[in-house]
Amino acid sequence: MATGSSFHSGGSGSRNGPSFASPSSSSSGVPGQAQPMAVVWEWQDDLGFWRPYTGQVSSYIEQCLQQQRGAGPNSSSSSICLAQVDPSLSAYIIDIPNLKQFRQDTGKMRAVRRSLFPQSSALGSGVLWEWANDEGGWTAYEIRTSIMLENSYQARQATADLSPHGYNYIVDLTALQQVNKATSYRRHVRRQGSVPYPLASGSVIHSGPACSCHQCLSNSSAAGPMLGRSRHSFTAGQANRPSLQTQHGRLPGTSSSSAYSPYPRRPLSMGNLLWNGPWSTPTSVAHSSGPPQAFGHHSNGLSIPTVPLHMNGSSSVNSALAAPAQKPEEVIKKYMEEVPGVPDEDCIICMERLSCPSGYEVPAECSQSLQPNTVGKLTKCGHTFHMLCMLAMYNNGTKDGSLQCPSCKTIYGEKTGTQPKGKMEIYSIPQSLPGHPDCGTIQIIYNIPPGIQGPEHPNPGQPYTCRGFPRFCFLPDNDKGRKVLELLKVAWTRRLIFTVGTSSTTGEPDTVIWNEIHHKTEMMSNVSGHGYPDPNYLDNVLSELASQGVTEDCLK
Image 1 (cartoon, rainbow, N blue to C red):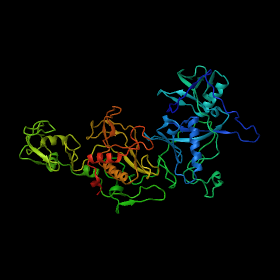
Image 2 (cartoon, one colour):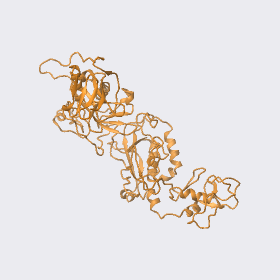
Image 3 (cartoon, one colour):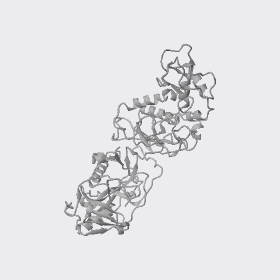
Image 4 (cartoon, rainbow, N blue to C red):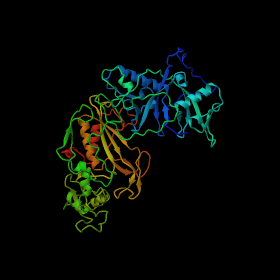
């Protein structure tokens, strides 16, 4: 059986255990009158199987939809936070316009749908059947399989054969085990009780581009066809197993009234920051003509207002890597000046007294101007070191033509990092972040594929992994948030946001990790501690950017 995420838990049932009574009337009994239908909300797993939410969660989603309909067409709420109904689902949001489930801490998105089943079925009493997965949790059977198991259970059958549904399994309803007919491997199953699934209200969910089907054209609204990308988004349970419906790309937004979408709109300005080869500036960025544009408000709500996008000219990464490499000795002499009188203190690099020779030897390629006893001071901050020690420190870094004082962290030149090639995208979301009620949200999506380490990485020639990509990050769409965005674009171009190293959370070596510039990866909650509200975050990240040499001066 295919494994899947386990959302739900509850009391298990057995043949002698608790029963879950159905509503007193499962059918109207009136000739010609339609049978009442129960609503089941489902999410699609990685293999294309549709897994049901519990009756409690489905009822909550329906209740929220009714409230949104009652609020009228101008309602700005189109997302549903599942934390309100089930704390174990606090990381999940249902994006109604796009019919997506969005996990805030990982950015994972899955399709969701609204299905109808006869209210007289097992679902009318809120019963679900689940099987024990390999991760130690429980995965719900597909609805049609769960209904068959419950019908067999109520009929007091000893077993239920799942082959009519395409599975080579038999479920032992007495021992509560699923048996593989080919291998005899057994898994535990359980019968779960929940709140009965709600009755259908008869409304169809529409979103996206205008639909011209008969159902929409006959709608009583004077405004014309309803908007609907997934215009027939709920149907009765299907007999055939659905195929995996992979979504590629992003659908454009429709109007300013379509509020929060974690699967949001087209990129605002940074879609060209795609590094898919040697580090160089994309042509559309490096050679764009005309003055930088300032994007203001638009009727479709897609642009970040009043953000000047300075995209002309070559990027700093391109300049740093394409320019003729400076000799390390020249870099040291550029930012340090020799001092005739040696201070009576230690060199904090080699921990020897400055009056003593450096603990490092003179490199073979170095001229005779730098000797073990040569002491110099940095021109800005004035801190003193053995110049040979500074040379050794420089040679052990990225050798990008910049220096950083090991004492006060003052940066000389333009610091660049070792971030692997990847892509940075920026989107606008009209919904507000907790703690920032007066503005929308900026979403940043970073995507870095696995690759081979270069000479600047810990193990050149060895592969590196990329766990958790794409990574979704969020900023408030206010003045300070937009300033942080502009500086993050500079940091991305300078390869400073990520690096290759050992993960502090998993201990995995040779993997892409954050590089000391913190990002908020949750939008509507703070489950991981990397979410909102956080009143000090913007100031903190500005300080972290400054420590990497990325300041407002870079935007001038």
